[in-house]
Image 1 (cartoon, rainbow, N blue to C red):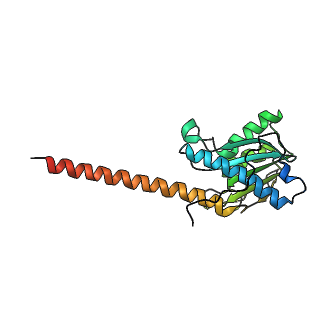
Image 2 (cartoon, rainbow, N blue to C red):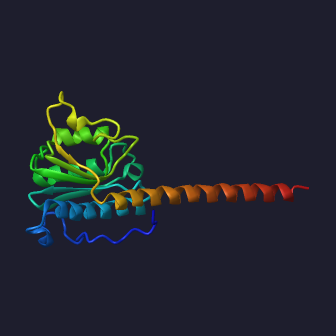
Length: 199
């Protein structure tokens, strides 16, 4: 996959609370792609901070009400996933922990923790980009939103701007592996140099 991610037409200059004028009269698929572009911007912000690049956006009645990105490392908070950050911000913005008229856009399939929070918030629709075969709770590992014994079932749509969402994750982990290899080589070279200096 190309490591150079294309620049999305995501209208990322639209602040929370404003309706994107480009979305008036557009299809749901077009709106999904646009809002996922905003989530990708959040993922890039996470990557710049050294966090796994996952971003999320909460939309209510066509308005962006909150954004969030991964920050568990910097925040020393295991619950600080992108979805959790966006849900917390949306609840504060709207003054209610229930968000029944809201949609959540996230670049990576939610995990069990985030799926639980999404259910408690009563989010009506979840749109994600990349599937997560290790921790995905929307069907990749488990499908909590299809579990009939649970009392809330958000509509789930996957694969929106999938290639870009996968690409940014692959780029992050590839660069991290390369940096780790460089550190190991530098350490080995230093050890060899020190050994050769020993009389």
